[in-house]
Length: 120
Image (cartoon, rainbow, N blue to C red; front, top):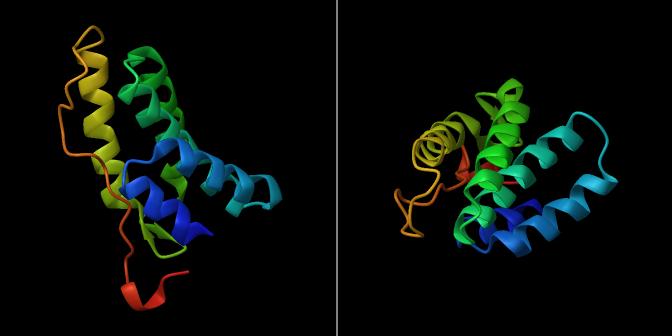
C-alpha cells in the first residue's frame, strides 16, 4: 500500500495519497506510524498549497518534515534526504511568499526509492 501512496504523491494526487497513508498510519505501530504520519503531512501540505491555503501548507510541510528528520537518510527504502531537501525548498518559498498567486513555484516534490529492486 505504500507503493500506491507514493505513486499518488508523485502524480500530485495529494488527497488520495492522504487517504492511503491515513489507512497505513491508523494500523501501524512505531516507528512506522510516525514515518507514515510525516509523509501524510507533506501530502496534506502540498494539497493545501494547490488550493491556495498558504498558511496550512506551511504548517503541514513544517510538521511533516520535522517528523521525518529522524528517519534520514532512508527508511523503508525511501530516499528521505532527497524528499526533505525538496520539501525544505517548498517550505521556504511558501513562507517567503504567503500571498503569492496559485502558480506552482517549483517542481513538485517526488518520493524516490533508494534502490528500485528493494521497493516495499
